[in-house]
Image (cartoon, rainbow, N blue to C red; front, top):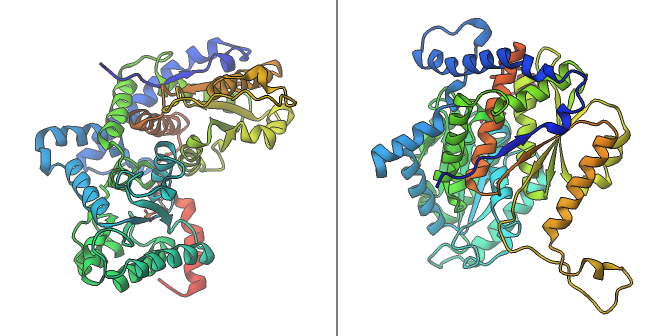
Length: 471
Ligand code: PA5
């Protein structure tokens, strides 16, 4: 049976458009942006000269999930997927904590997967309750001495307590991720956590530390010199924020016990859909069209991704980076904001309902819960009047909130659209990643902004290095 694809339902937004033909009129431009996006793959593969306006060109993420699945089919145990899974299994068996170091595109995607797909209290469960999956921590995504020191102290103590024992208890592994290999936040954190691993586990450090990096750069050189047992490459032609389905995201996901084949399959299914479905039935093109029309024709330059349930918040934060770094150029590009509802209905909601009319709201809906739904218990003390909701499942309460909020926005002529996940699992998370990456690139091509590269990020790095007197 083919797994269900996510759906994009923009009807409420479209009904507010003064000219509803506008969406259809955009089809020709969208089709040519799609063609350009797909043709860029060949341009990149030709390794010929890249026209100036297309440089950098990081189009290799588009067919990457399909390539990995094909490689798996053809090369089985020698495929990249199988090697990632084998390394992950080894880390799971040998370590009780895994610290994942990285920032930006080398961090946000795996955080999104971890929050969407793992038990929110994962690290507090026993090893047996975690099915042997290590505790997972993220660092290197900031410069925060207190936060890093708290994690170091905890891991140090665990190692001391378990000293002399065999097995994974008290043992920490490190996955360090940096495509350039020179990002200061990650590099500095790596020094610190590497020291911890080397101090406690000596020669075993070479197999407890796994770098994921580009084929060249400082981290690659260091990894070769250190002789780490496994080193994974981030392929050329896939930029940081488009790299979640490379070893960057797949290795941590596999360590966390996720089904990385399903992640890839979900993404590959969306690529296939993107190539073949016509405008009006194509989630990527339709999502792009609505964002573009409301921004360009109606001045809605803020795009709210309204995630229903905190599991999807980090997917939204990943998308914030994707959109900001890809299209926030030449003094243009919509501003993404992620909210979690119903939490933020009690904080930002007022502004969205009655503030400036500069927002397009897209609901990211989680679909059916993965686990049996909580129901509201009855009670002899009914002063809160909640016996009227006795046995009502929480997903029904959530749906009432979604519908009520959408109606309130519609009544106030505020545009909303829905992205509906069938449920939250590896297949649907792979889909949403690929859908949003493709939509971002198509939109870039539509408006003439190169979606790849992030030249604006360099300025702060240069100044910071100058302030520290380093190269
Ligand atoms: O999208 C990008 O390329 C950036 O956000 C990078 O991922 C981020 O700057 C981290 O870079 P690196 O992986 O080289 O350490």
